[in-house]
Image (cartoon, rainbow, N blue to C red; front, side, top):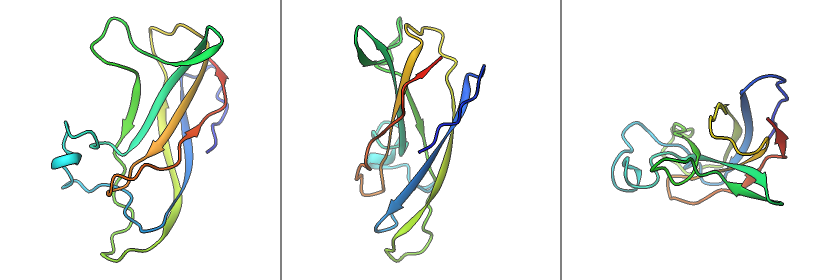
Length: 133
């Protein structure tokens, strides 16, 4: 993963490299039932959690006042292996992020990123380096 420095910007891109042993990464537009429904918990398959540093440690940010538990950027990556056969695939994914968050408590931040495949296997969790807003 690479995070470019963009001075004076509240937006940037995550560049993620992936390898999937059986090629079942990504969701089609038809994947909207069961676990992949809007309320099923896996509608989005790229999850990016936002953390701030204060009190000597990182904390997942909880917007206040809000009914949202924590700030989470979630994206739906399309199917990358259109073959019906299981086959290993690898590649790069670019994910745009806008961090214009009005209730920031700290200017020291980081992100935690992971992906789910169609079998609901969670990828390795990647953390960014700390950066200053």
